[in-house]
Amino acid sequence: MTESGKAENKKLTRRRLLKKIGIAGVSGAVATSGAALAAQVTEDGVDEFSDSLASLFQTHYRRMSPEEVEATIARLQRKTKRKYGKNISIDTTPPLPNVLLGYALNISKCKGYRKCVDACVEENNQGRDTQIQYIRVLEMERGSMNLEESNHYYDPETVPQKGKFYMPVQCMQCENPPCVRACPVKATWKETDGVVVIDYDWCIGCRYCMTACPYWARHFNWNEPELPPEELNPVTHYLGNRPRSKGVMEKCMFCIQRTRKGKQPACMEACPTGARVFGNLLDPESEIRYILENKTVFRLKEDLGTEPKFWYYTD
Amino acid sequence: MHKSRLVKLFLLLFSALFLFFVNPFVFGQESNSSSGTELQLSAKEDKEEAADVNELDVEDDADDADEEEESPEVVFEQVLSFEKYAPAFKVKLRKESQLESYPCMDCHEDEETNLEIRELEEEHDELILEHGGERFWCLTCHQPDNRDYLHSLKNNAIDFDQSYRLCGQCHFQRQKDWFFGAHGKRVGNWLGERKLYLCTECHDPHSPSIKPIKPNPPPKVRKGLVFVPNGTHLKAKVWEKHLLEQTENKND
Image (cartoon, rainbow over all chains, first blue to last red; front, side, top):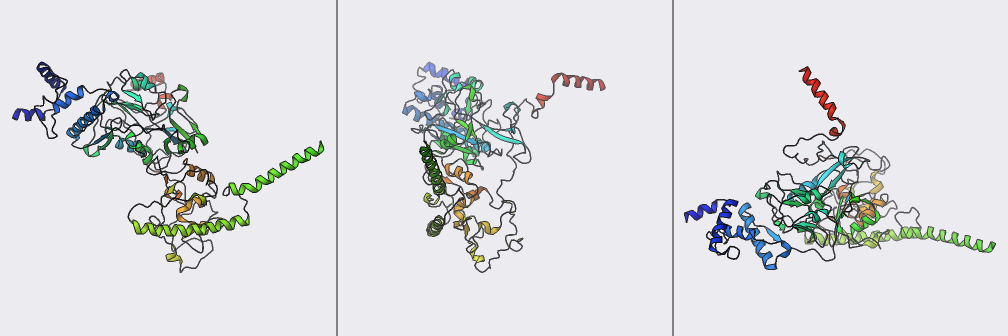
């Protein structure tokens, strides 16, 4: 009893896990009877060891049966509860039918406040110290489009500065995404609504996608993300903002936990200037289609043929 | 030969005339020309509309005083230019909840209307009227007889919660963008009902340009890296730096 209590308090290291697997292997029922091996039953009714074991054999998200998805989500919720002491919801809302999501950003209106950056970090559960930010706001010289001379560390007393314009860059959700082709394990793919997503549990952390992306949109968790439990956003999506761990990639996914329910992405909601417009590219009545058809628009590095679904426009 | 040319000329003239007269109806707000009948018509509409808005507001108040109010759907027939084209939307009401001294007639009922352009000293002296250079005065936009309303250049009453109709008289291009979603801020959702902020939610009508503010903090520089101010790494040559360091070392 006391021994089991101790073991419960200790964190499961890889070594101990492997040891336990070895023991379990001897008993001859590794994969199937993880739960039966439960020696220490925690308060949520399932012991940590069998959870770790099950996550070791967790398959690719798109290969999971509905039952497997359900079990995986329950397990991830238990895991989060243990780590952060907080109950979270992880939904698996599929892409909306007849929807191709696109973004338009008015660079005449963007003033470089960086409100979108912080709203994004809060919404999407990024580590607070690792400085993974999906949006970089580039301060650019007026009349130039030289990205090399842009500055995203600008910090003047007030913005906008004279002679500068501001261009936020984030994942462009390319229609022809080079990152997807670069992934050796197919842990990242384009959904039918055009959003490129990652199965964080399938990612092996090779960072090929990071180098393949021409927009610096993919970010790697070099450390365990430092996320104070009180700042954890409990409304999450499996392919969206659920808490990540060390050694996996992450990126902007158009806040699918929000946008698939019709809500605005966090960056758009936070923008006080109304420079950000989000919508369905397949709907000819939509605001974004009006902008694309009536405004001066451009895309970043269009010549690479990645077909970004993120447009910049001017008044 | 000669006759056919004349006919052509007539046709051209006729079509030009036709365009000239029909345009004001199609692009009512953008064009300067107006006929007497049109003016009367829109004045009538305005009055009806104002009455409608009042009734609806009262109902709203009774229902939920605390909740953030969204107006009943803006009826687009009243916006002459784009009624057929722009998708429908709602605007967030302001006058009851956000205008401090509304209804204005509480005070202005007893005040005599002073049409003289002057420095305001007793009331409203905090207002800075930067809008339009020196060309505007309170009564350019505010209705002199009934201060609970604004008024257009054609002297039609405009509700405070429909201020976009006033602004659109000059800023028609912006107004069009706002109708279609290329300007202004949509609230809450991207799918379904469009809910927009009015012009005055973001722009102070008396000095409409947006004032600069402090930006949120910049991202941290990654561990092990040093931040080099922008441009310096492109300008200073390595060999120049090297020579500079050498001479410094010699001096030491």
